[in-house]
Image: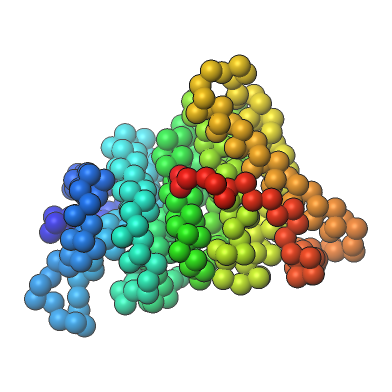
Length: 335
């Protein structure tokens, strides 16, 4: 565990390309995945037993999030297969943490220790406060991956894992009724940016294997966020911003219909694939219904700027609530 701490601290201070010590994430992943008893140790470990209360070493979980932010930011900056492998490993560690309710219980509470994240590539993430729950840093890591790794040789599996991680976090927040004070707009922009990239660059990708499922899972994530917005987001203004961001990106959403049709396999006998396709189609239909309604309402006014349009959306929602509240996720198991 001390080697893990050393690897993370080294990466935070200087490294851009991942060093071999990053592979120490693998046993952490395996212990968390296969050994429930390890969770308590994982959440409690601090590496400097002699440290005072004013100079404590970070928890192992915090150190791993910090290291992951660097691995995910620079995962595809070079052509190194090792860098991509470490980024994929880091994302899977984040997913297994998001799937662990004991870890998430701690992550959703206030933290006395800020988690240092990578700030080496633009645009920079907003600075978090020292009391910010660790789950915010986990979501920040997902945003870093979503933003900085959109290339011709798209790491589709890691992107899908990233979307699953975001979905699982949001699902857990909804389950425990935690309204997280977070810069949600950054997440919505990153997720919609992924769909925009796929819509415009699909024909230029080195492979389209797995892209259909990536789009499906991303649409389900956005629709889940919209359906649960009133429980999930801390203030009405956050809901207004989410809806407006979808309206602003309505063309991107409409293009997903064509993409899914071109990537689909008609007449498939795979039941799971068929169920995913149906679920994604319902999610997309709902998203388009919401965006089309507010688009029409904005067009019927004299709104000329983004602020004017957001104000229109806010007034409509304050008066009538969210349009077409058709929650298709109530009976779904967690992702």
